Length: 364
Image 1: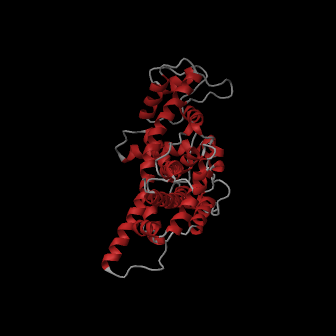
Image 2: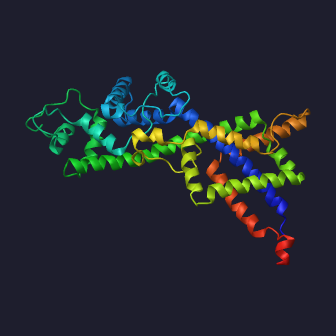
């Protein structure tokens, strides 16, 4: 007969990793928001976009200057604002300014396209609106400027002009040109978000190991306690089942957790493309990581899981085994909450299908 003890120990361990992953993800999101890691990643890409082939210091300086002009546009500058509910909202702009990352984390594709058109288009004065011919002539040196326009005071770098010209070459009007730029930006953001997720994965791993060390979450010790203590195992399994029921009862828990944990870091969830968020609301509508961390720590404390430094090992062998167990926990946490949510749900379903009937059920 299937040994429920092994399954229940597995459920208990997955539940522990889930709670720790939630805490680590929340901390990782706090770090990302405070230091502006997403905005720094996006800013680096913007600079490269203006001159991807810049080699000399002068070329790199010019590309950086154009990036600053891009961020200085009103439609872009207005996006820089921390969301509400953050205990250190007043400090974040200062921290980001010191680190050179006081810039928006997300930009909609339509906003990006409009900003690039603003930078590339020649001045037309107040006499008429900008046309597609105006924009194309400002990018293509072979085309004379249309009547009523003048050359831009400062032309875009050649690489940026070539890029924009290639994007709008098949367009027939300004709207088509705008859509082409938007599509290219969305595709580029998929690659940028992939780079950020790799960086965030390492951050989550470091936080996971640090958290396991500070709290002394030794996977081997916890597994042994769950195996030996029937009462502890039963209480942890009940808590795990309740958590799984609350998250998956409406069928939306996995998707919701995937979205929140993706931003936190693990890379297990979907990347957020710039066109899938409203810039002003993107920061304000995101779950508050400070509240999430507090709730998850409370859940961890409420459980009877044997963690902490009440009885540390005093032998070299014991210390080594403890460190290996802590490192194992850190690696498990780095897999991310979505992974452990799905694993918990599957194990709970398996337990429900193989759980032996009670005497009352057998009599019926």
